[in-house]
Length: 421
Image (tube, rainbow, N blue to C red; front, side):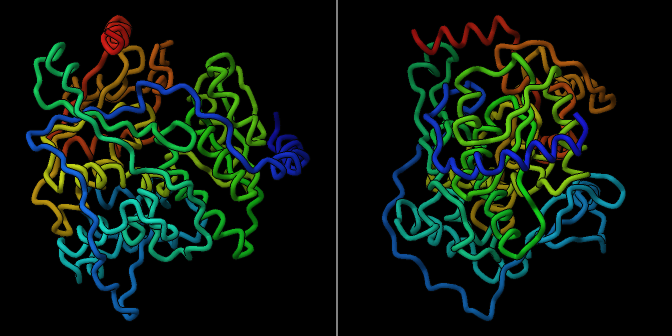
């Protein structure tokens, strides 16, 4: 379908999309929404604490886009962009990253930030009851509270998988962070609340954006459509035909998204949505967009809170498009840089053997990366052969003394059996 035809069809569907402002029921929980954690410390309940005095109005926090390459190579750059600009790539065509003004944030010590974040857990004060927006100063400090679209996402359970860890893995301290306990049943809500809030801000500033679009294997489209519906913003999603479960498909449809089923895989859908968002006033919502990662990094900060600011030894994150492993690195690293903790965990990225480009890259000693055609896998949410954030993932793993592992289809099925024993 040509971009002009898509745009006309999308606009003709806007009324339908704007009329749907509620989310569908939670879809089936994927194993890829779980983060497995090993830690020698025992998490404690965060106590109710009084918030510290707010920062002086004379101190302003801010952030901006800069080329990711300047971070990965530790090279100063003069290239930067306001978050109010619509930009996804650097001038050289590389990834972008969001850089915070650490000098301003460092005017407050680690204990201040711990106390502030802990004081917001469970609050009903808008928007700080959200696990994402309780860290607003570290996420989108300049956005007005009235522009934020939140379902009080985050604050998901961290539980001790005692029986599973001891019986099947020989581990006493296995903990699981279930980021899928959220509005749409997907951890993608953590990033989408940030991205859609920023789009809401831009539209109020009369930036000519008619909607938001994504490619998806299910979870991203569920999160995008739900938050766009709440904000009364049209959404469009590209899904690979016959590779999305009914539970995943029902949410974007129920939320009024313009849904296109494409005879290709996720990587093909990703290529199409990038072409469409480059030509039309539709905002790109995939993790190529750095805004998503700002929300997803808060899950790492939340883990530290739940361990009473003790650092886990290892954190295992499933990897598909590979934005989330870098988001976790960003969250942990920011806590270290601002004095909340003195180290970061070793990170592990887990891939399905049928969709394992990062694993193969790691096994080559980071010498040879080849995008591949992902085969069908039980872990359908990470069935991606050409991940857009692979450079981010490599950087995160190298700087956290991390590793990459894979699981065969037999191993995935075996774990599913163990869970129900």
